[in-house]
Length: 286
Image (cartoon, rainbow, N blue to C red; front, side, top):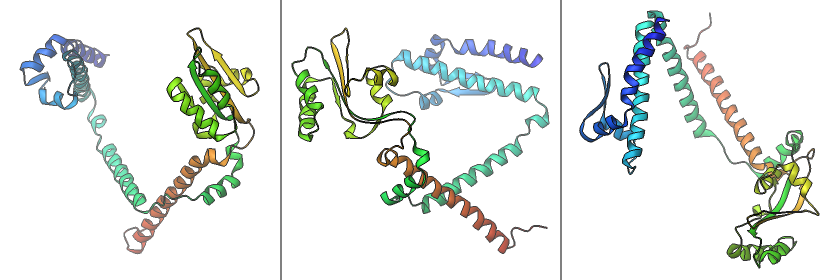
């Protein structure tokens, strides 16, 4: 209880005083020392290093107040901890040494891996992994190949663009894109690649279940009260339960393969270091 009272008392005295924007402004304009907790001081140069240039005086003052309060709070807690914790509780040497060892180990592993890691993954390797792990790529939601148009409802280009965006001819899609560039708010084809159904549903601000339910003959249309029309044409659909196409998951597969290579390097490094230490007499088990 005494600890809590001491912390509260110091915070009540220090923090409200530091949060005064007028006081902060005066410090920033004319004083080198902007705050002090016990014998520890915060200087204007410390604030200059953390507050971006070009801010308004109001924003600079606000950020300065936030930083000073955070700085003071840390010092206040450390001061109380120094006073209230036992000598054993304040002894963090072991934890610091453990952290130092972990950090050094991690940094050396990163250096070792970065110098040796092969990040090139061929299409053949991707295909091989895909075929061997089809169960990992079963769809939980539909995948679509879709084209999306957002345009003013009264636009004279609406009918023409929507007609061409439903075409199977590449030249029609190109022309629709060109026409939409000057007359539509958005026209997206996602490079004719597969997208998760939620991507398209987000364009209509609805759930993917609602999107699928509102689809008629591969078309979805929504007219709002502000005179904006959203239209989508879905050229292909893959349903849940099917394995995702390899081109949709290829980036994920490459990441998996590279991650496995990285782990193999780390494991090999650990084994090699232990082997060398035994052979050199540095590591002995009694």
